[in-house]
Length: 222
Image (cartoon, rainbow, N blue to C red; front, side, top):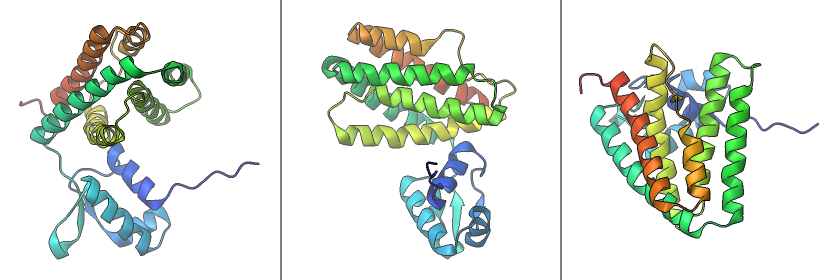
């Protein structure tokens, strides 16, 4: 039987912050987190230090660590940078991508559709799976971009924006994660036709649509 790797303390804490299981501005006690994840204090300290570098955790002098706060201004800035870099990377991928690039997109799309059809998952499990496959699809779209630095920046910005999106879904009356029009299918087909202009605009609108939902839910006063 294949052994399943246990998620590290860092991975578990990171996921809990991104998923909203740990609310923004929550105090992060090393002792409490060590008990929560069944670890010693050292891995928790290391995880907090790494997450502080990623902007998901803040340190307040000698007072300890807190989950990073959220604000409309931060979300707007993160979203603007993500859209700019991701659409540009997608444009490069369409121009330079080969059959392996197309296969990665098709594979990610297949997995996404398969998750949608599953009926054996609880609502929370299904949400986690959909979120994971959504990220996989977006990363596949830009995987033909030759700049590893650009891809790293996009990955970081994506995770930051996902924190806001997942929090918005937890606070929404209705799960509005999936628009009526299958935007992913439209984006994929335009990319496979190597229609740079149409595909890029579809991705830009797709990101803007998701961002608008977040703003309306988390920051309705804006």
